[in-house]
Length: 253
Length: 240
Image (cartoon, rainbow over all chains, first blue to last red; front, side, top):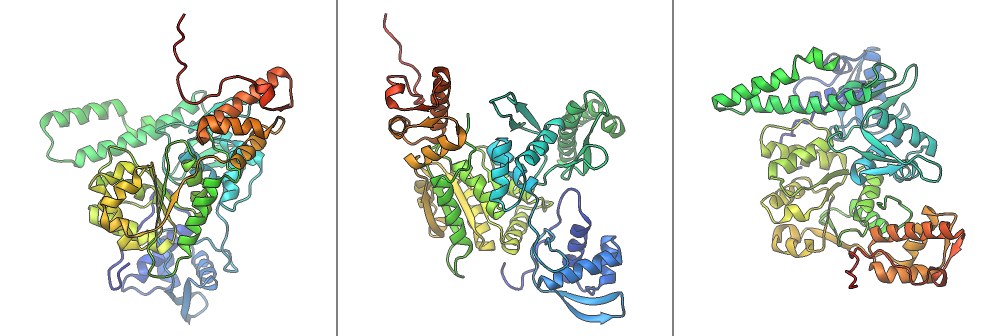
């Protein structure tokens, strides 16, 4: 960056974890005239004061922020020393950097290589310094297969299953999360929605992938709408697409 | 059959160590790394390994891409909401690259270099001073030589190496642990495939199936005999 230049506005797309919202608020406030206080960050990001305070303290231990002045028990004025870009730094309360998820590496490798088996997926995650067992990698890939992101080939004795990313199903760089705590479901962070729930409808797998396509078409439609001037027949065309897509409520059912 | 194994292959190590050196380079040195080789030598595996190791941003270029498409693809991989104009997008990418310190890997860059979009690369590099890795086919150095401003910002040229005997031994050991393949067999295979890792994978699979059919747990050149190797050539027409 050239010194003295106003920084570009960086906001992350997709679903936001609480700390991501807090981090974005910190960056916005530190570039503005408004004071960077725990209170302001909390109001701006819509997170609890305690959550903001804890994250601020963790960042301070990691040398990213610094407390300038304490204002009572809850509030304090901070300054951002080291801006690390759009993504919220992953630190624990002792200020130590936390490793990134193994599934993030698997999702990235799937996108670059196109296909993976569980053994390769484990090796790719280890390349990124994350730990996962071969079985863990298989479970994740299987979850992606259930949600319609990848197709599965093989999986018979002597022939390990190969999972291939379906073209057009890549929804973005943030990995889908296979949640298996109470009930199994797959959450897509890029689309910010649950794309698959176990046992909801029989053809759920097809629906999940259709939803990703639907989202893409909606974006295209929005782009088409803003792309003025359009000739009359262009408008008619949009109406046609709208009719095919139907109301949002119908499609996301 | 693709080669997605990351047993310590030569090319994987070459790219990983080049990026390592670039991220640790002293202030003032250029930060562009160029890896080039014909298709099938394991560039993508190297890219994937390096991308995971350094949490790099990764874009794969297409022939149809314009400047805007290129910038949008990078912003998409960064998961950043794109700005309205091209210049805003360049600022966003440059800021994110320099702030986060994560490298950017541009695969199949040969599609980009002959177009106006190549100048965007120079802009991105100048504005961010980050580490940018260009990966492409063999004519990439020649195309780059025409782009004077980009060419002199290259820190390191990394020509991908054809598969070595060690690579093939490693690959055979990891992929088919139950079949021992003799070195003379692998040397013969190496001569035929001319170092193309993708064809090595196909041939290893052939050797494996043949060994299974013969009920052997180790195989050498004498046992393999005059059987064909897969070289990518279509079979020649046989005159009757």
